[in-house]
Image (cartoon, rainbow, N blue to C red; front, side, top):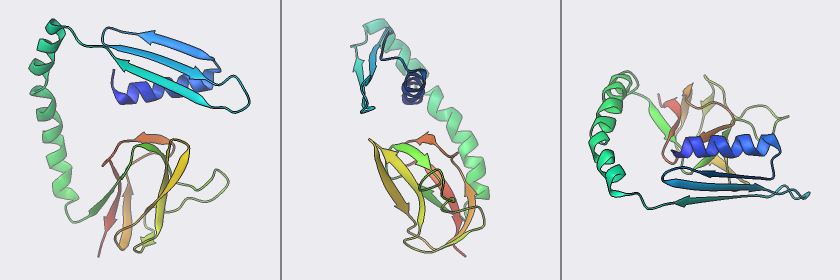
Length: 162
């Protein structure tokens, strides 16, 4: 079970209104408890169980194939977008294009930005972190959908510095 599946499971449980969910698979044990009180706090426990020897042998066999597959498609867009600067996520969290639901988005495709301009916010552990631009230029492409989870170093925006 990868991190995206776990994040989707947490969101699903939070929306469903269940107070506690336990899931046990071969190598992962997950308990998700949502606060039944007015605080709205939720706690998630993820425990990795030591993997047995036969499963461990299957992982190295698949590992060489996995990096080879993404490498080929990644090389193709890089040649098209090589003139652009990629703004990447400095943290893991949930990506938001607006400071709040009733406010306008920080930037659109075609927006001119300067150093220090806020591009988005990323929520991590109920804290909203403003992501500021380190470059000046024009937003060419927004690579992440609003309210979606992002990983560390995941590309968020393409900026044309010219």
